[in-house]
Length: 173
Image (tube, rainbow, N blue to C red):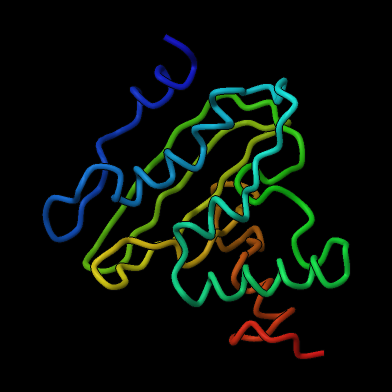
């Protein structure tokens, strides 16, 4: 068994809010799927790139999806980098992942899955979910500098995009 199977087997059971979820649709299963390609190649040795924006977009709330689309439109229009200049799933551009683990918490229509791993240093990312139309969808990704949370001035994907494009996803400059 490879690193992926060992890493995912060690994870705690998925948190469920409101009863059983179909396989692969819980917040934890969604985050596990986001990290699967990185864990399959933990040292970025393959000559491929992973489109982290597209990966998150597939599981995003409509509001977050609009913001991600606005950033993609900006990149296409300017043929350059706009608001996002790094891989938002691994908090970097290259990766050398180790020590991967997830912790899930859910209540009613919100959930948070926290990913902890090393990638050229410790990383802590919190995926905030909202149940929308009966499905769990990512509403924000928060990158924490450490486990202290609010004390470390976390970076928010949604706040970054809103400050660039406004809540509607329209460029406001």
